[in-house]
Length: 465
Image (cartoon, rainbow, N blue to C red):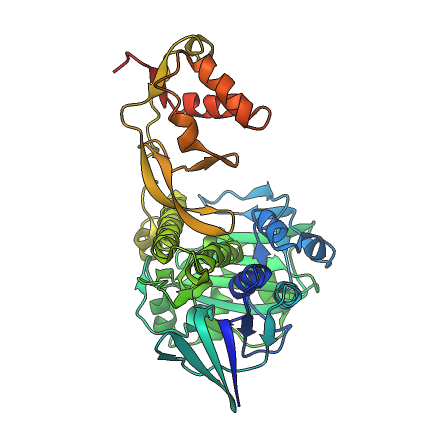
């Protein structure tokens, strides 16, 4: 028995579900395959506030808000030194990942994707311009394949670590802390760091992040090491005396890495099949969904008759590289903030000074004074052809580049910049330019764009050097 489909997504976690939802909604014939029956248990219950705009994009924010998950409120944190801090985390969520992922998969179904779960996909075979996947006694043929299988990585290819290898030991506890309304806890030790959260069903997950060598020195006594790490912590010690572990202590790889090649003209890797970030950020799910949405624009452009596959591949590759670099730099600077055990191997190997802030161009003339003068872009600024998402496709547009900008900017507030900036040199004054922008832009956008450019020192007088 065989079946044909335009796109097969293997892996129905957040990245795969986001990709399937977007592409099915754009009219593509999509099948999403997963080896598990949903809802299925999964680690990674803490979601950062940045998840909400992504849930809005997928059309599931109301369902998630009504699902009974815990709105993260108070967090106990001991990180920089021995002093404990209590922080507010408005907008964050602690979810049951089985239920959360099932919501995303259901949205993919509603968008038109066929969900095949449980169904175990064997290693895909590439044939000409497509793929064959054996699913039990059936064969699925696909024009395009998306690997969303996480660290299992269905598609072959070595991954490069972006940080030292890290092992996560975790278990579920019933009873014990956190008291006084605290939802999450983060603590440190010489061997690593601990994270814990009260889950929606009232249990508590505690995780310990250490070097893999630490387990080997303990004689591979996973339970003994895990209990020792928790007992050394003021926040977690009570678990070991007042609560009970409800299952085995599990170990999983938590190393950050990147796949050197994440997309070509017939396949793409999303989520942790493409790259993994340090769990310290609590934004793994958010990042996975972002890769799925970015991949959707790229794949749509590759499959479209009038699409630009080269631009799509360049866009997704650049998107991945930027995300990996940003997360790696942020994690290294956070590890460097810790002082109590800074001399220990675990902390030294992961620490790095924060990247130097990009120097802003000095702004010497107030915007109000520039209005009556002729202006141009700063000498170090330029407009360069850059692959960008335009609507649902990837297209090459000219984007503004300058050392003060983190990455090229083609659109600002939904408005394309290049056609607006081309008016600068020939106009008698900045006020005249803004007046021209006002006639074609939505109310208030013209002055907002001028203010954004001015604040970054990108507008200078015509005769200025």
